[in-house]
Structures are given as structure tokens and as C-alpha cells.
Length: 354
Image 1 (cartoon, rainbow, N blue to C red):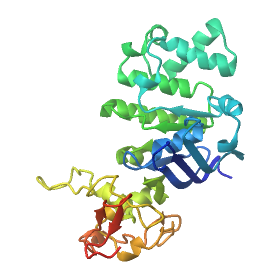
Image 2: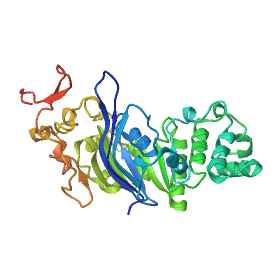
Image 3: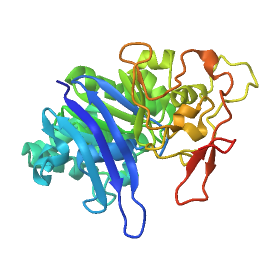
Image 4: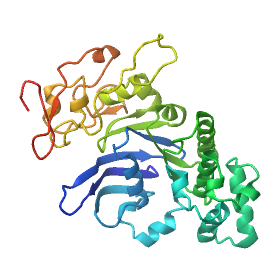
């Protein structure tokens, strides 16, 4: 059995006087021990909300969470808050996206690291400070004893991210969730952070859930990839299989929009049209249909299911998947346009048929 088994996870935000907003619409995936699994997609597709739901860090009011998220046979979504707090740090840990806002700005780094050691490992005084210095040294922070006395604003962005990683691995968790840990870092520091995460997985057997919108990070780190769009996984495959033959038009578009060094000079980029806001409810059809150059009318006749149209283990949520590169040379039909005159946006064919 997988270390983490997420089944039909759904997160809905509610507010008085407003329509409910479903940020995650039934996401399913697994993470095995010693494996790196990626959650990929644009901002707003539900990646971070998924991670916060798994860690029990969503607000207690105005949020409904459904589905199951079994960690080593225990459903994290139904676990009492007190038991989940005990598991965070020892069994589960998370590296947050922005280290400057995640760290307490008025507390020295050393105090923040030793607090974890005291809470979960019972270390106090000089033993805790020595272990904290060892952790900072392990993640590549120079002169760790001096850094323990410094505040977050005195560290560079890369050092702050390394300090967050040190705090996350302080108790050797079995599952580590990294929410875009390389955002806003230059490429050199980014490569060092990714190498550090890979070493943790290889040496400690840690299971890593990598959340990112950077396909370069996915290519260099992940074993399996789940592509999310509008709160659902639209494609799931091994990393090499996904990069070699993306079958969902969204995944194909993400890969096609990346600049290539071997492209002729002056060749324009091929971005995906529209934005994440241009979507229809999954209950009415494929949410990606309003942005898709490859859609057919069947895309608007109900929620597509994850199927395996080609390679075993390569699943795609699409009724008209991309089976070769020439399939996306031109649109099958003109893309649907958004009709926003009603209470919610719906996709319609340019000829007027819903």
C-alpha cells in the first residue's frame, strides 16, 4: 500500500451571501516511500489548497473538505486536530512557498529551529542548539552557529529557504510536501535546493510531494507527475512518458509554451489562450474546453473520466486526447466562447449550441 493515498479530495470555500467556490474538485493520487510525485499546473488550479488540506492547515470555518487522504492507513482528513499536530513535524512536514512570510520576522532562526526540536524530540539547551546548528550545516548554510543568532531578514532568499528545509527535516518525516520551494530564487540557488531535496529522498527514503508550476523542476526531480486543472487531475503519468507524449491538450500546451534553446531565432512562443478564469463547471463538461484548440462537442456533454487511451499507467481526462504531435497543428473546431450573461459562465459553440 502507498504511504499516502489521496482519493477524491474535494475542498469547497463558503461565504455568507456568496456562491460556494470549489477549489479542489476530486483529486486522486498516491505517493510511495522514497518517491517524488509532482503536482503541476497554473496558479489557481488547486495545488496549494490540496497540500494545505493534507496538512490540516485550512481554516476551520468557511471550508468543507471531502474525500479521503490515507497516510499509512490513517485518514488525515478525519484525524483530531491534537493528533494531527503531533504528526506534523514527526511524520509529515511541509516546506512553504515564501520563506520570508513563513518565518517569524522577530524571532532568531535558532529559536525557531530549536522550538521544533524541543516540541517533538525533547531536546533542550545546548543539545538543541548543537542539533540546530548541525541541521543548518546539513542544508548548506555556512557558519551555522552564527546564523542561529540572526533574524530572517538578515539571510538571503536561498538561506531562508534552506532554513525552512532544515526545520521541515528536523524530525526526519516520512512524507515531505514542498509547495513551490524554488519560487523567486535564481537558477543557481534553485538547482542547489533541488539537489538538496533529491539527496533527502535518496538518503533518508523520504516520500516527497513536489508542488510546482515549473516544468523544469519536474523534469529534474519527479518520478511521477499529476497535471491539475481547475481542481482536477487531467493527466497522470511517469515523468518520461509525460514529457515524451503529453496527451491532454492542457499538458501539451504547457510543454509547448516553454522556450527551447534549439528553436530557430525569432520563432514566436505558443502560449495557451485565455486564463484559468476561462472555464466551465466540471459537471457540465471539460473545464479546459473554453481554452482548448482541440475540443469537440463531446467535451460539453459531461465530466470526462481519467482513462488510459495509450500507454499503461498513462491516464488522461479527455475525450479527444492528443495521440501525436500533428493533432495540435490546428483546431478541430473553433474554440468555445464564454457566455457570461448568466449567473455563471458557460461555454457555447460559436454557432450558438451549448
